[in-house]
Image (tube, rainbow, N blue to C red; front, side, top):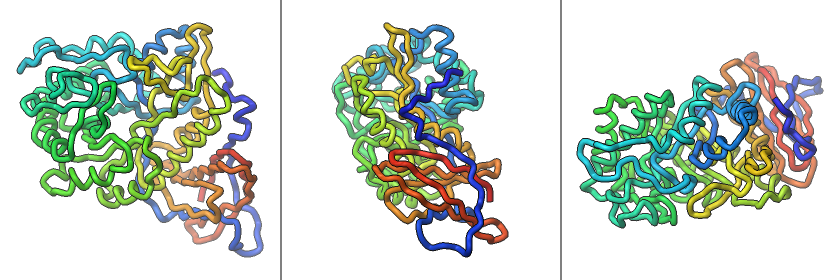
Length: 447
C-alpha cells in the first residue's frame, strides 16, 4: 500500500512502552491508568457510505479503488468495522429519491434500485475487505406523499396515517440490503429530528418518536423477521441529547424499545450531558456518535491540523463520556466537498480530485487511525486521570490483553509526562514519555 504519511504527520506516533526503574512512586507529572476500573465496551469505528461517496469511488481507477478500500477497511489501513447508510436520499445524494412513489398498502413498486448504482457497490467492496462489517441505517425523510409539507425537504412531519407504511418501508429496506450482503443491524428512527433543513429532513417530537418506534417500527421489524435489529433514538446534536433520552425513555413502557442513542457533534462538546445520558440509560444500551464533519476548507492545507485535532478531541471526549462507537460522516468526497444536491459542501478525511485522478488522504484520517486501529472491537475503557489539561487521554483494554493509551496534545507546548499503571500483582509501573506540541500518539503496553 502506498505510504500517505507526509511531513505534516511526522509527529503522529505509536510506541510500545515498558516500565522503567524508578526510586519510589512519584507524585508529579503523571498520567495514571487504572486497569481494574472498567467502563463501556467499544463496538467499533467507521464512516458513512453516502451516495456522494459511492459516486466519487466510481470515478477512481480500479487500482485507486483497491487502495481506498484497503486504506479504510483493510488490516493494514484504518480497519473500519462499522458504516452508516442513509435510508432513501440525504443531502449527500445526487438528488432526492424515495423507494416508493405512491402510498400503497402492500408496498407495490418499492425499490432500492437507485442505490445499486453507487451505494451498494461501495458497501459490498467494504464488506469484502472486512467480513465483520456492520451497518447503521438512518432515514433523513419519508417520501413526500407521507409528510405534512408534501416534500422530502424543509422539515415537515410524518403524517400519522402513514406511520405504519413508513415503518414497513424501513423494514423492507433492511431486508433488501441484507439480501445484497449488507448487514444493517442497527437503525436510528430519524436523522436530526429537531431540524428543518433545506435538504431531506423530518421533525419528530419525543412523543412522536417513541410512538412511532413502539407502535409501528418495532412491530414492522418483527413482522419482517428482523427483530434482531437494534433501534436507536435521537441521532441529533448533544445539547438536547439528555432531553430526548428522558422524553422517550422516561416512561418505562417505552424504555424497552430503545437499544441506544445516537448523537452528532455540530452544537459543540456537551460531554457533561453525554456522561449523564450514559448514566441514565445504563451500561447495556448503546451510545453511538453517528455523524460529524468539518466545513469545506477549499483544499487549504492549513485547515488540516485544526480539523484533525477537532476530530481527536471529539472522539476522546465522547469515549470518556461513555460512547461505544464512532462514525464519521462521508467516508469520501470529491475535491469540491461533494457532490451534494443542495450545495451543502464539507470536508472528508479522504478527498478525491476527479479531474486530476489524485487521492488526498488528509490529516484527520491519520488522527482517526489512532482510535480505529489500536482500540479493538470488544475492548473496554479503563479509567485514566491526568495532571494537566494540556493533555487529553483515553485508554482501552483490548481483548488480546494489550492496552492502548491515546494522548492528544493540542497546545503549542511540548509536554513530558510519566505513565503510571498497576499490574495484577499490585506492582506499580512507570514509563517516561514526551508529547510534542500539536501531536497525537498511542502508547501500547501490557499489565
